[in-house]
Length: 231
Image (cartoon, rainbow, N blue to C red; front, top):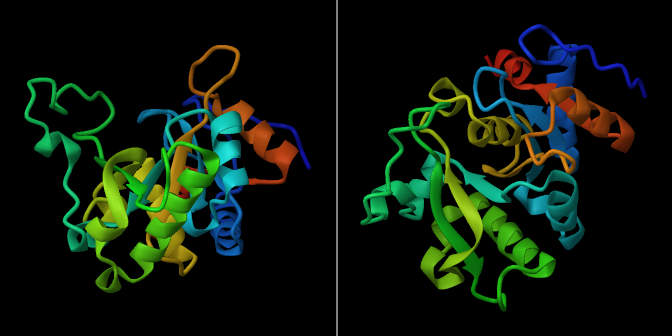
């Protein structure tokens, strides 16, 4: 595969647009992870994204070791409503609980942190995989899931609430991941994890993230191309 990674003046990498978006959707449909850069003017981060049903213990290890950010499960607005999952900031009775100083968006998407009730500590690769795949099952058929009976909070898997109208409302990795799931015809449960640079501790640059994708046979796509494809 090519290792050339031309970078535009706005910090995003060049891509083949619709072709990259179609390849990302196909990869999610096959159970493979993809890399998605939101936008240089937003968080300016690349996330490693899986469909939640495909997150094995080995996938959790990859998210820890190769990505390095926070492992989160994004659920659609309707699924969150079915399970009565709140925005975390709305539930915290503490003066630090506010979104008013976010530079990249109007509010964070964080909801509860959970473990599946069949896990032990909840933090191991096996335990987090068990929780994440159970969340995928719950999202596939929310009417048949007693959320409180199956999951406990607090836990080690962070839940994110998707915006009501998805990418039409918000263009974060939460919504981009869910848009990939929808386009692939899969339940609305996406795992997102920021890719960090092991040397600097900062967000991995889009160019370096694209090299990682090339080296590992994965799809890299710019958020703008996914947005264009979905519209």
